[in-house]
Image (cartoon, helix red, strand yellow):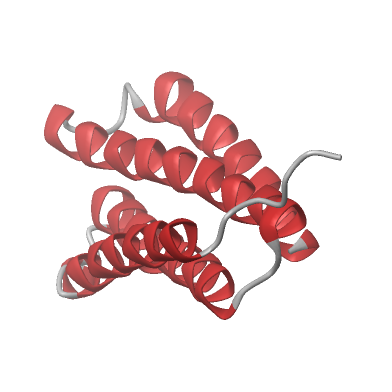
Length: 128
């Protein structure tokens, strides 16, 4: 679970850097629609970086289940496919990445479902 804590911190930190880059470096060079696409990638990267932190902390609290590990993997791959494809689309005009974006979105949905299933099946140990 430690790896998901590290990945979550990295994803959130990079989201802050990318957000600042968009606000200060890309604002003057990208069309408004492309800038909005880039910012969508930043937002989803940050949200799912936080989700990775929840996965990591939950693993320490209620046990590192297969469901929780799969949720973390889904969030990680979702960030790579969804967010990176939006960055490539908006900055580089790589329209061939367009079909990759929904796959990343499906991985986000899968991750949330897996995490919810973990919480439904596993209860935290009683406080001692």
